[in-house]
Image (cartoon, rainbow, N blue to C red; front, side):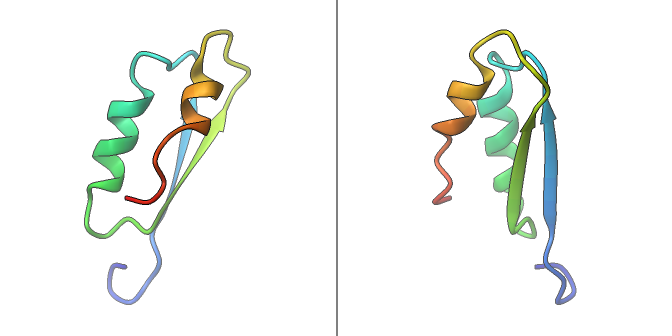
Length: 58
């Protein structure tokens, strides 16, 4: 929360298999981010599979 407001990050992803885990981690590590929503944009690599397995308990 930031100033009593919920902070939601929408993270678009297109063929981001190589970077999505690092980007997601760096985003959720911010103290004020409450939720990250990953939106796949018809990737042709393993982006969807990796995103589905991101640890959301962080």
